[in-house]
Length: 253
Ligand code: PEP
Image (cartoon, rainbow, N blue to C red; front, side, top):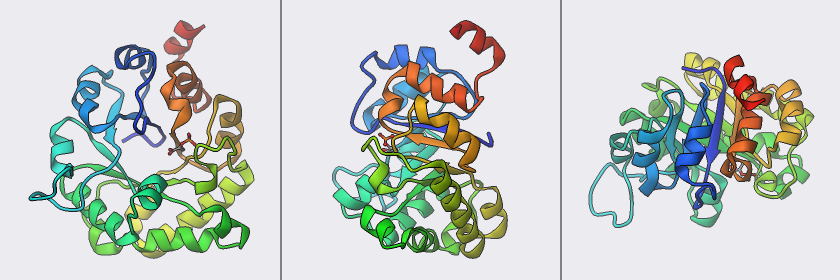
């Protein structure tokens, strides 16, 4: 398992340069690409060996009469190893509750997927000083029983006010929240899982702000939306995290 991750959340978009060109340009341990469902197989088949694939969501039921849903097992069958769960767009636009995110997390683990669980406060909650309490509640809601058999669970701290807004959290804010997240993990999750869970940051990460966040944010990587649709920008993020081998750096120069 890599100890640092750089995750591309393409949302309901594809890279304008094309999937093949994007995958041909990215190659580093710790990179995970999350395309929309219909492209999972193609991305899993075309990605370099070092690059893993994630779905952006899964059903909260294992199988059955749930029109339009895609199960964790089907995602695994397509060659994905990860699934993003509880993204703020799922929570806010589609009304996913903490309980639903917990059910999905349990099903993902049962199906052999590594969940990437998104947490984060909205602007109002931050301004009222409730950011830590909100994140800690979202972590507690995942619950011990669901997590008992997990090999790895990744947590992405994504303040809602920073997602797609061009306004990233400062490295000081991220460092403070990364410590609070780790404390909450230790309080509410099985100890071993909590200790080794990678904690990522997401929210308007760009090649311009990544260096400072890597150096001072106390995090284990990034979950990236907008900047993940352009392989040049995405590679620059990988470089700022030191994920690229020296030979890849040579090629880029
Ligand atoms: C996201 O969607 O998870 C995200 C962090 O988006 P962006 O990088 O565009 O803010």
